[in-house]
Length: 281
Length: 243
Image 1 (cartoon, rainbow over the protein chains, first blue to last red):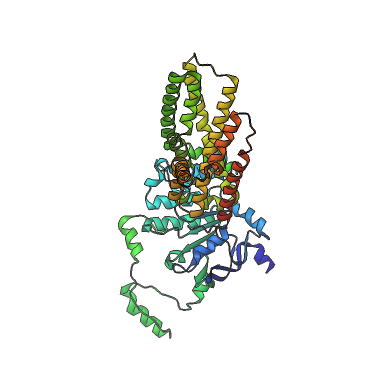
Image 2 (tube, rainbow over the protein chains, first blue to last red; image 1 turned 90 degrees about the vertical axis):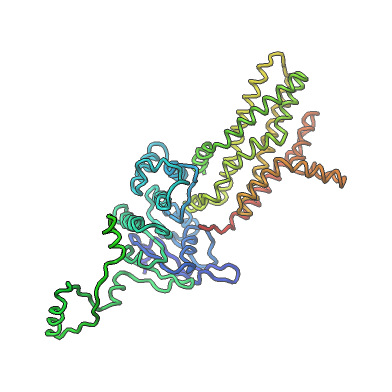
């Protein structure tokens, strides 16, 4: 248990959040380990965003405790919030350019002089706001560019922990694929612990290592990719249509039952990328 | 907080409205001061400066753009959430924003003072006595304090209501119609309430200074500012932020 806690990037213990008599969170307990990509899934209104607000201190919890990077008390929790970068939508000044917005937030974080310019250049490159797009006024950005700018703001200063609230909301398939790719890169290349939420389950399925399923104000279940595989002991065998009968007879000869037979469809996403180019990876 | 202040000032000085306001203010002040000088010499000059800084036009040209530049985009940009999430306290955020406004207002006043000096020097026949010079400087400082007060009160309304529009309306109301409303109330009720308002106390203090009395009225006036700050932080500490 001790080493489990010391490996925790974020830990919530029995968090309750009430608005009057209405409990939005009814005792959330969860732990995100260092180096995880943790997917927080649940329908709209389940409490995902409220959980993020508690972690970030943007809303006070009624009871329970939050710990960031092993913080033991409120003072440490407050100090450790500087280790967290977060994306919670398009939070920027529309009359400033993308670059000026990042410069503003970088300066507010205490990055100065030459280091500031270098950091902003690095981030713009990572999120793909280059080739003059970075100098356009942010209010004129497309939704995808706004999401990129918001994520860029979140990764300024290379935080240890990254929180992304519905980062693919409203994006086109290429935008969604790009963000998925970025999330993996943030963990694998920059060593960040990432918590990402979505109400679209399929979106996180191939991105996160662990999942917390939020339902009715609690984490109904925490599962891993391995748990998902173990849930389904059957395996799938894919053969070409021409070999189907032969494959079935070989299996039958060896006493192996075929439980389900069906024709596999090309996913819409694969079809889309085949048609217009690009990739989901 | 220093980092936030520095970043914010750089951002604020990119708002075009403050330069438009400043240009209009300079034209208005130059006209009013010159008109005073032509009519009444050195007395006219002092009256011109006082008239130009005390009217609604200058408040609209200076105070409103300052409030707009510092606060207008705070709620819509959700930058507060970002800054708070990065680990700055709510109290420090409020203080940083008010300091932004105080510094910006001071910069605009410095430009106005320099412009007024240039106007005065063009009229080489005008010589102000040392007492007149001191009074003029005190008058300008009190005007700055008054205009800063308007911003503090408007910011309080914005933060409590969570509405930028209400903050802007309050700012315009303080700068343009506040005194008028009290004049009307006093006219119909014979109650002398205005003297005890922030505005009235500053007027009273300056009148006292002119006749050599101690400006004790400044103390309750400053208390008003601290009370507004305390109320703002009280509500802001309890504020629930949405994404």
